[in-house]
Image 1: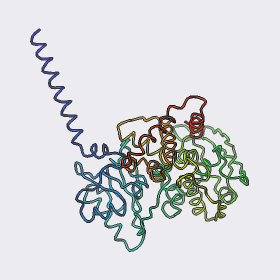
Image 2 (image 1 turned 90 degrees about the vertical axis):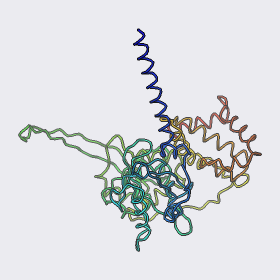
Image 3 (image 1 turned 90 degrees about the horizontal axis):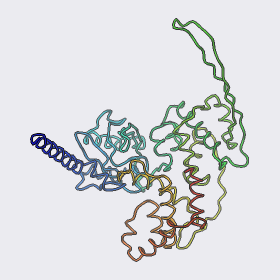
Image 4 (image 1 turned 120 degrees about the vertical axis):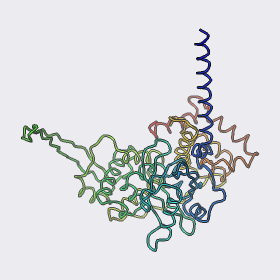
Length: 412
């Protein structure tokens, strides 16, 4: 009996030591440390001249773990942060340096890209995703000399970095992908726009009937024909008049699969910002570019501003805040953060920021950047009070009705 108790004590002690060692290892893991620093990770410390140049132009900082480079930091509002990179992404290689995944190889790929005599110094970085571990690619394009960054709409970043056709559309550059991939993703985008309840194709939309017959042939083990069965698929596609000719010419590519990442991403984009948001306008402009058509100039309506230069419409704030809030929850270790909760937090952040009347606070909080807020303690009491009023709003109140309408709009 005593021997069994002694063995159990030793076993428990060994397990405790192992757990402590595991915890210490996790704390020492540089990837874990970088992600614990928040959405944008770490800023470079004592960077080499090349690392500083990569940070200035691409807004991305790398460290090395076990002979593999990983994304240790992103510049808020920088090119990499706006083009799909995540803190913790483990590099597999690039289209410049092949399978070079160590730190010096990754930095050399950036150097080669920036030294090209032609092109925009962009290249594809291949990574293991920080959250899922799945492989994905994203194209990094540096900030221009004036600091301007080519941004991807938040709702489309994950799909665009994985689907070359959608990336070509969003960037307005059909040469970035094979024509078949561009056409396939363009048709998926049109399908999403047509299906959305917002009817973004406008009052003059053209209705195109879709009729597809699929025949499945059966043969035996020797390849002898045994029979065939046909099934028909029909619905309608509604597109704006400028896209109708292209859609008719390519209707044979109409996708019938039930699930599509590209289609779902476009649906999410419309749900988040509507038909007049900057991201949707960028999508339509890109579709026009790959289809070789021109869009009419949008009617210019003077945009009103609220008190202190705050826009009157909350949609843009929420569309920026929502995906960043979800990402920050993932970085904090929440494996399945609540989408409804994220939408509620962002709506209440918007309400509290608007109530403050401070345009700089409003703009920074929409990007989940609370440094300005922390530097202004005189704003804290009013901000917290307005946030609490929104978050705890009772059923039937105006704020609660707004929240329920937002959930419905976002299909949450």
